[in-house]
Image (cartoon, rainbow, N blue to C red; front, side, top):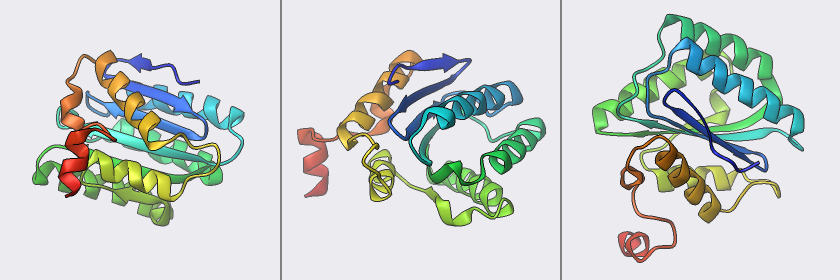
Length: 175
């Protein structure tokens, strides 16, 4: 656990009871299926329900029809194996609203709207994960390190994620 896995513009790190993912490329069936296959494997090894932190970069488009159908089927199958999903669209306000609408609709249709959160910054997203943490959830610093490793693996700038947690830049932004 903790190693970056990539597949055609999507990166995943599983650590403890958290699955972090960065989407550089658009949500299409083959990427979505691969992601859920990794989730299924992690669910079998996890000590309890998973939390998911999904970072969607502005280069990724919303799911097309086949990907939406796969999302619906696989989320229904997972049921209570997921306790929290936090989505962070990284882009302008329009992109944030598009992703928010797509994700909320998907989870409301599943009857799982109460477990899904959309955040405006990566730091806020990490905070939402930690709010629902278990003793198996990695620390905020480890989550930040994993997210940056996924950006490196996808050959995208981790500067898009904002200041590193615990850095002087992050501390200054709070003041």
